[in-house]
Image (cartoon, rainbow, N blue to C red; front, top):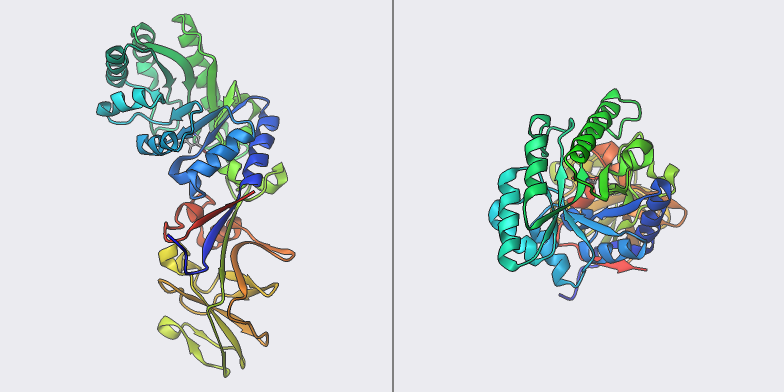
Length: 371
Ligand SMILES: *Cc1c(COP(=O)(O)O)cnc(C)c1O
């Protein structure tokens, strides 16, 4: 579809390549780049290719649907599914050559049967819940699930994994406790004769902060996009740089007298005589309406406050004495001149994490991949 509106997401694939390389250097292990949720809103297929160019040996997704899209685009790298899908997806995941994360005997039986029917052996990674409390076998089930994986004729246990609940908080004892529990899981597997090459526990925060979590493979998501896993852990301090920009152009300008009310609810009044720019971006694009009264944009090399309520399709910028022109570049996220509006700022304004804003940018915004 040819874009008429100038609003767009720009993704710097060079940054993603460099971030993956950097995370591999930091960890000293192989990297499994997490590209679920359309590459955290950045576009899964180009991100996957950039991650592989940056040295990732694995990719990971949350859904069979996401894996299907990568395979359809010709991405043939090892592809990890992070949770068990419904058992009736077992056939498709064998056909797509996915490596599922498994933690129930029922799911293992379904994959084993699907592999047997196709005359192949399927690789699986077995996951322990060591304290995340989301998915993974609980400790009382470790023995039975490990044995089910080991004994299935058409399965090969190639990986053992867990996931950390509080890795983004540097000094929590819970993380150390989870890693001790994971060591118990690895010992249990070993005592059952399971010798898996891929041992993994580390998301981005653990990759950066918890060396003991790195094992043979790390699973960073947010860090490959150059974003901070927590506002207390700045990605920039770890040599990572943001890849995403949200860019548009001024669509309409006007001069208003002091005290002119603007936008729904008249929540903003012009503080003086001055210029107002209209920008064709709104909450239907994923610009959070809650940035009303807090957000800023870069226009003409300066920060301009968002004036009044963010509407579905448009927002307003207060420009004071500076007269903008229709067609001037507007940056909601990313660089203009020497300044930089970061996803971290939005997250702070919104009381959320950096993961949320990019995954909420909607498909109405075309993604342009650069570099
Ligand atoms: C999403 C996810 C990751 C990536 O986490 P980040 O915090 O984005 O690095 C890793 N492992 C699992 C199981 C996940 O669900």
